[in-house]
Length: 266
Image 1: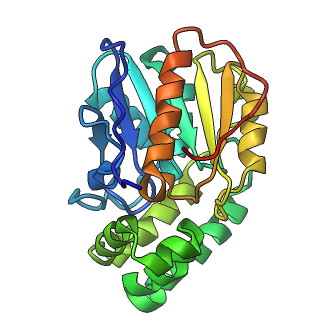
Image 2: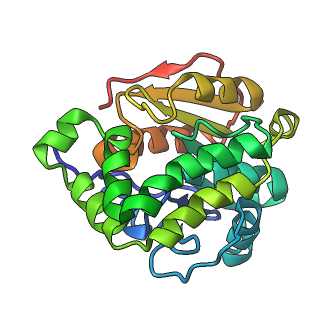
């Protein structure tokens, strides 16, 4: 099976398609997806961008809408999905549609102490053993055992990118999650845009249940479950590309679809 998807850009060219990457990744993480005209965005400490201690998701959401003019179609995976949630609720007039994938924390409320404990647990491997330790701790959470065993190119990209990252930047990512305000469910209930929610059947990091709860909360949403792990864009890009195509077919209508679509991943 090819590792490069062959999808085309959204037919409605009046909106900019912006891709918001997961933690510790950069614009190259989309290389297998097949949307060459989509725009990418780097968080502080990512993709050669200087570190910015103390940054928050709210700041990055504001920066995205400042960076790109006109209506936006958004795709966010994992941490990028959380960014999409903040853009939808802070700048709804700028969003035409959105796709949130493998982002189980969107709409989940926890007090700051709980967020800080979780952030410190994720940051600790890099504090103790550098980015090699962070890589070893997260590859099993992000990819299937089969991909790790067979030398999948998405694993090669992830390994090279994480090992090149400053450990301090890794720590700051997780502190940003702790310092960013959760999005209350009532604000998500006010989202009027069409939103597709994509869950990975084999995603041990985010799971499926929390994304199903997000589907219940967002009014004009539809949901797909794809046979994929957390880093769906790297291990199963062709499956995600097909889901994106279905999103843009549905987007002009944009009415809620209650039934969850299961997929073979093809």
